[in-house]
Image (cartoon, rainbow, N blue to C red; front, side):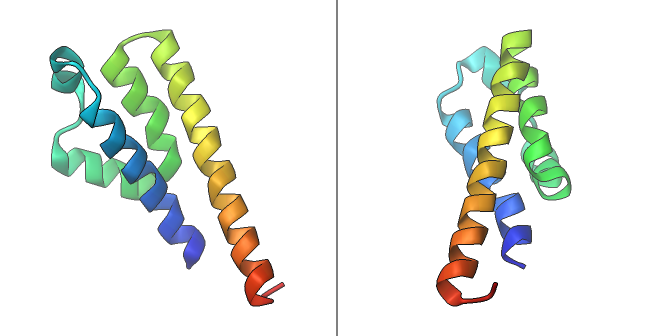
Length: 90
């Protein structure tokens, strides 16, 4: 259950943070609200390379998205493992 929540929550907050920092042109390329929520909840971290590639329109943007995707997956695993250990679920 925790993994499911983190799978959607982490990419949601990453994209929200990124959208605040985008230029007007990049913001115009970003997903509309409904599409953004659908992508994040359906695809989780896999939506991040698409978001960064779509807003930056470059290979560097896609690579940044892949790096952020990997970071969110690692964070998700660390949080889940840490909580399982602390709560004695393993």
